[in-house]
Amino acid sequence: MNRTVNVKRLVLLGIISVMGTLGSLLVSIVTDVSDMLQHYEPHLTVLLFDVLIAFLICSPSIIFSVYLIFFARKKLNHPLLYASCIFFALRSLWQLVVVASVTLVNGFDEYTLNLLLPLQTIEDLITTGNFFAFTMEIGLTFYFYGPLISVIFCILAIVTARKGFKKTTGLKVLATVIMVLNLLFTVINVPFGIEEFWHGFQDYLPRIISESMMIVSFCLFWIICIRKSEEGAKQTDVKKELAKADYLLEIGMITQEEFEKKKSEITEPSANENSSQT
Image 1 (cartoon, one colour):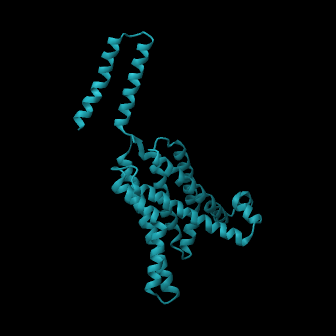
Image 2 (cartoon, rainbow, N blue to C red):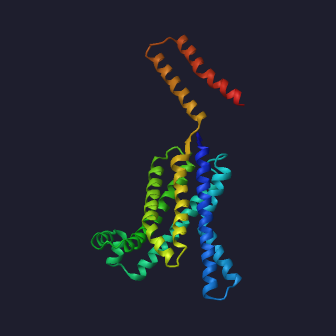
Image 3 (cartoon, one colour):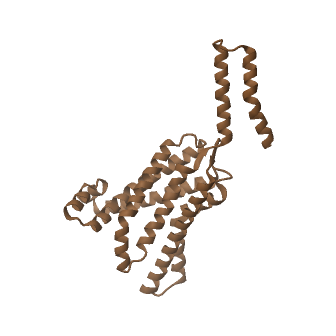
């Protein structure tokens, strides 16, 4: 596999992923503890169960953070990369199940149609100017399409990794779409998060920011970190030069002796570099 990673970018994404993961865990645990203390008598079992759920929700990013920091530079297609993709896909599938369940309970009506194609949501924003209502409605649409695209992306990522990261163009396009949608969702929800903060719901804003950091770091890895290794690039150049010399020999532009001389000039530097590395 002639692929490697950009170490500097890898370190940066590792930091972002860890910050987002720790932030999401901290917000979830603090919120659960606060709710438990305010509304009913605290029980250790309930608290441990809530903490377990928080870790399960963040498990894709936990696995991916460990992969970025400790394993990616040593082995690009490490099993932890596949594990993170699988857990991201399972989490997205669960979100889809929740949205589908709500849709089935409410029945397929104009509200459901607007969820799939939010034309009414956009029209209401233009006519009423109610930005907070818009963020709520468009958020529901995002919760449907976001997980759906993420599942497709995770499957494509696993297939791409299995094939040696040779064709990543489609994957990069899909990763860009997911990242842009997530950033747009986060940005338009910041005013709503600030409003919620002043009304006593301090967890909403840090939660969406932490979630965004986790998703963005996962997507950026496929866009900016994976590159051709220098060894693979040199081998490709040697093959091209040899093919060019062979073509010149076939059309009679050079003699057999000239071809052999040119061949030795092309292959010897590469052989010397390999022997010096070993």
